[in-house]
Image (cartoon, rainbow, N blue to C red; front, side, top):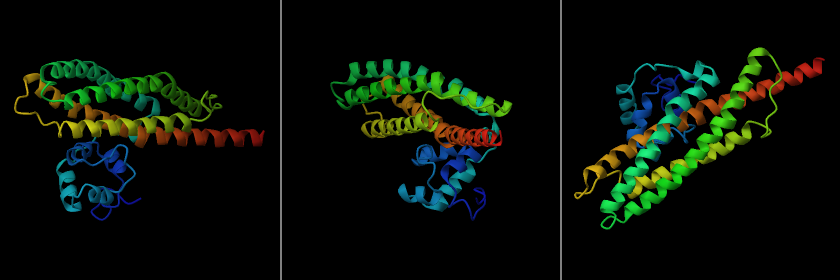
Length: 253
């Protein structure tokens, strides 16, 4: 693969590689409306075309936002990465779901009569919250522990654990599908709030809500990116390696 940082290779680089190489680039993509989380396999050139931005404009923005990552998760254990996702992103999502649900209720009560779109926002966010909480529960109780067990089996050269779901590819496919649904819900929220634009009669609570929603969105995008573009592909590859090595051991025996 060409080096994403080189002038000649950046247009052909996949978005996920660009962000994995330098997580600060996620903020640039977020600001420009470029989907690096569910659409991480697309090249920068294709992504620029989709959002009607020039390669030069985007690469210049990326260069301004470049900074070395604090932690390169590409080279850390899967167990560490999963725990980081739980500690940072699951915790943030749970906290903000509670806070935003209350805030949305306040804004709907105060402004719903004159802004009917708020009722739609309340319904959308309630559905997203319910699905996201169940999604995180499945990851924390089922998928992440299994990934950690696979990694430990590889480290100790033991046979991989038996999975109740057959293969890790099955829950991974479900998680990715749910990520796409969450992304679509966030896009609808962005649309009905007119890009989080506070109306002239908006109160302090209204403004606080429309400042919190994009922060919630950006964090969820980063959360999805780490799973779709790093944790899940590495877990699938690890399971394949374990299965291959186990088959070789049985054959040699």
